[in-house]
Length: 152
Image (cartoon, rainbow, N blue to C red; front, side):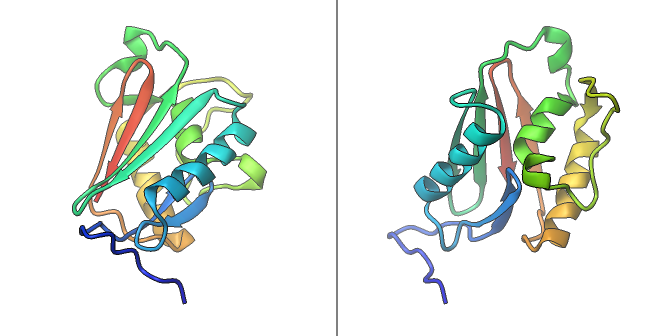
């Protein structure tokens, strides 16, 4: 059985889905998760196209995907996100991985905007079906050069 982490502070212990895999913040360190996710992102999207970081506190898990794509102001409209960001976070299609309850996907490889609430619903329901913990709260911040996903 895996040993729980206790490095002198309390960390939120939760199984989460990132880039097609489940990670356990109660067993794995932030550095370990970041290294594993970065390897998958490099293989999935391209070497150094996205830089990943994660921070786990006693109340929140914050995952940051720094991408080198400058989104226009229209792409950053409140409540919207690009499908490319959804693919990046979940790993949809990477090594034949698919969310059990997928977010809306436009056919023929066209890029599109979607409502964040559609992505959140797909992520939350799929996480449980994949064996991760229930996501009680989720916030997405879509910025010109990064996506910040906060979970509780």
